[in-house]
Amino acid sequence: MANIVAIVGRPNVGKSTLFNRLIESRVAITDNMPGVTRDRHYGHAVWTEKYFTVIDTGGYVVGSEDTFEGAIREQVEIAIDESSVVLFVVDTMTGLTDLDKEFANILRRSKKPVFVAANKAETFERHQTAAEFYELGLGDEVFPISGADGSGTGELLDAIVAKF
Ligand code: GDP
Ligand code: MG
Image (cartoon, rainbow, N blue to C red; front, side, top):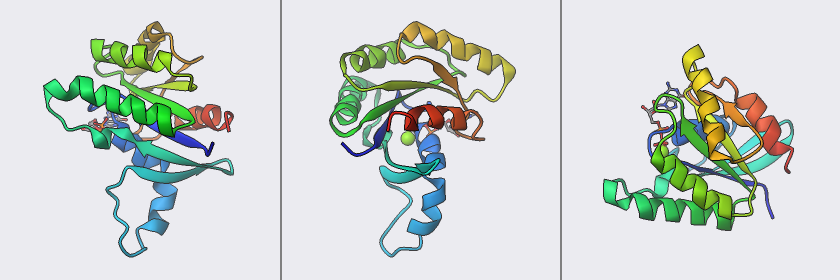
């Protein structure tokens, strides 16, 4: 299977910001092509000479409270069907939530490797909060990152591309 990373997680954890950062180097090229817009769910990324596709599954979420269940199912279906690796994004500003646990329970049943990214960890306090997410019991490690400023994303990508 091709190297495909699906970014999943509840709304507002920073999936799209991280997606844009991961595909940043390619956007400059693709934006010059006619008919290509920045607002897309699939992007191409490269890290240490390894090429992979990233899916921003959050783009499929309709958005109201009562669609959460359906949104989770849909995102996880996409993650399981189309990806080789799942990048599960959680938020150190809010800490662990019930919805994170619901995602985790579904992801656990998939046979895909899961990487947990504890996002928005720009401050010392939030970096510490990242440890809460070990409770999810997913992946080998929780990666404190900031999709906004890029910190921690190198270590995360090193671990992900090691699967390819
Ligand atoms: P999504 O709904 O999971 O795709 O989340 P978005 O990428 O749209 O981001 C949701 C909100 O979180 C926005 O207000 C972003 O500016 C903010 N955000 C995203 N990533 C970060 C981050 O790394 N640090 C901080 N502090 N805020 C972030
Ligand atoms: Mg989004």
